[in-house]
Image (cartoon, rainbow, N blue to C red; front, side):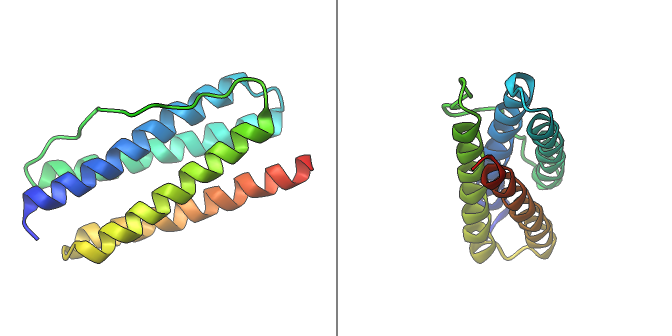
Length: 135
């Protein structure tokens, strides 16, 4: 796979991290439950760190990170719904990263994507635990 193809896939991943960062940051602002708000805020910071890693991989290969975003479903009043959306966002990210790992033959990129998957799985688990506590 050439660098341009790798850059395209990494920009898909970058877009997902950008959307997650924006969603989680907003939700952290408006969630009344302090424990869930702080968790969401911390995970937003993790997602931003993932953006940095992806941007580094993209620029090293001659590309530029795309700041394009899709539709983001910001939280309204329902904390349970917000957690479900966040869990879904993590699941979609994991699936996308796994797909890209199967396609990309660059050892450095694959290593970073695998590390991000591990963190996304932890995020999903933490969101699920908070949702279960709400009943």
